[in-house]
Image (cartoon, rainbow, N blue to C red):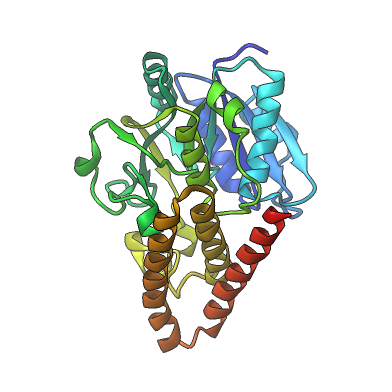
Length: 314
């Protein structure tokens, strides 16, 4: 199948968001082929193929019987795209996003004129607070424990320059086919969280640059269903996050795994100290609010990491 861009979407119990994203893709001035992976959603939230094709005819739907995680689900779509199309680019996109009409064409044109770039990202703004930046450029800093996104919660005026970056969010990764073929997609040892940090690092190791292209705009729901009363400055480690323990377990595991995979010995020690300090500060709030379950989640993440480390040595 001939097409320039394949967009990979995952639906996991977020059918309304997924259908809204398909509607926005239909309005795009560049109509990509879409691979939609239903990642083991519950009955009532599963993608109906006929409904999806009615909204967006140029689509292939993959039904997974189990939740394969962010990386595993996306890899299903990525592998299908690489095996069944001659696309130049794969656009990994969160299902809770809305694209501006020219968003994809801007990214495509940028990649066509920058052959040294293996991946790029649009400017990502909050859907509910469109003046607030969700992603405006990011960097790998192993001494600080992983990836940093300094523009988060800033206004769009602060992040309107094209940038060479070293980290882009898994929310929107516009990937060159050759870079995907070299890196083999997401590492499925990461179930959710931190897999975008790992893939960014491996794209750079493969010899490519990564870019931030702010003229391409994407709106992201950005945890709005979890935000509660914290408005636009919601943080996933907040005690008001009803999935706090899930987040903490995977964050601890993923952060430590990334350090072990990509950091030098000295960077790894510095990164672990930085993470310990940060997580200790969060813990003060958990203690004051009697969230012992948060500590248990962090401990589970630590145990998982050490088990994975032992398996890697076998």
